[in-house]
Length: 101
Image (cartoon, rainbow, N blue to C red; front, side):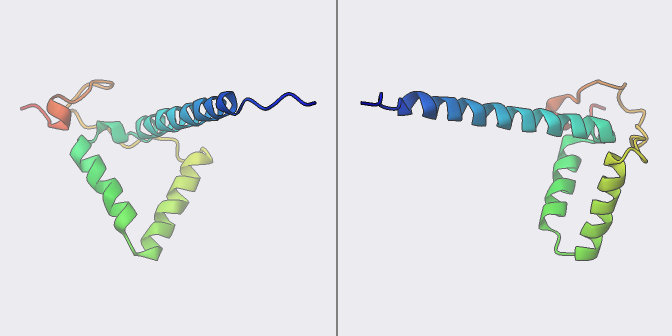
């Protein structure tokens, strides 16, 4: 007779794998924000821009954004956006993204 499968351990392994994949995705998203220079933007502005892109129904604008993204990933435009002089590179914004005066 065959040994019964241990479904609990298989489910735990799948859950651990799913968690690792989600963590990797979040880390890569953060790396993408930094690589594009978008980490220099205020958190509210960045969130608003992303929400606007998600909500946009303009297929032409989305195609322009897609092409720009593809070009970025091909290495042709790996120049991050110009940084403002508000914060030194790598500094995090204070007060949840609000720029200090």
